[in-house]
Length: 422
Image 1: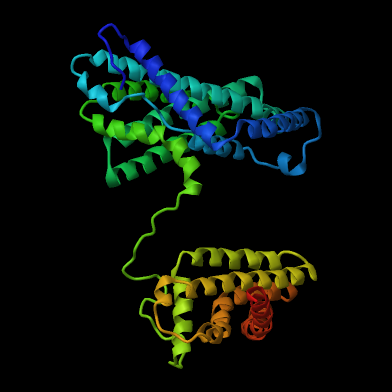
Image 2: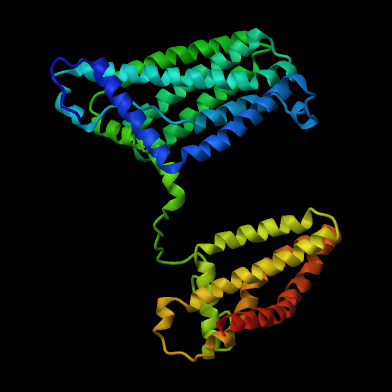
């Protein structure tokens, strides 16, 4: 923290810390995004947004938009509330040194930070009101009074949510914190939905809920400013909110540490998948278990589900072409996973035959492909026949496809790989 003289007041200290926070956030964005790229993307995006907004006022609205129920409006506003950042109070760890000497400074900084956060939320709510105004006016026929009550209620709900989430995060920990966040946020959002749905028929109920939000917000501000004995918890919450943007930007580029489990989810008892116990059978079994115990199994399940939908929804013969493409893509993916297993460091130090990988490949590919091919084949058969007969037809057809396709594709991929090596 910068050196603070006795003549420094809470206002100037708050402005200094707010400017430092703005510089930090803009620095993070500047590292992650190029300004020239943003300029080329932002200008066409604003023009497109302006044309869409003009169309909402003047053009004929599509049927899917006019058919949306009014209950979708509070749901969208709630999602936007949950996506916004939390409360930043601009309190630093070194403030504990002069808390006893200048308690009014810290309270002044917190009150200014809360006022700034509420003003920022007000700007966001006004922007939401401008964007949703043509829909509320043209589709639901709301007047100016109903629209004002809607966004006043939304702003008051945002204020309560902002203060309540920060207070719970500072005061409580562990299971109590999780339960209070769940029940507190759930009660707040439920009351908000009730207030929004009562705007047209019973506006007095909405106004009562709005006044309750205002009283709760005032109480939460006083409770948070006068809170004592939770300074370290407040600092932790402050750092979490300040680094949220940095975490969102760095999350795609930083891998999470893998959790070591004493027992895997699949094949816990290490049962035999293959009856023969030759060397190549055991290596094949180890390769299959290694894949289904790893993190890639989640992508495998998603591929099977999306593949089922991709062949079940389109008409024939489009789904048949999609089916062939999915089989080829799945085979190439499983072949790369199989080769990655043999390139592992542990397997490299074991004594093995040079042709072991080539001998184990067909059986390994059949076992890796069989579950996904069975699911995708079921989707294709359910499209071609009735759902019941399609499932019955997929039971023998799925294994048959995995048994017949693997030798053909394996010859093609093995020959191409040999040509590349040569």
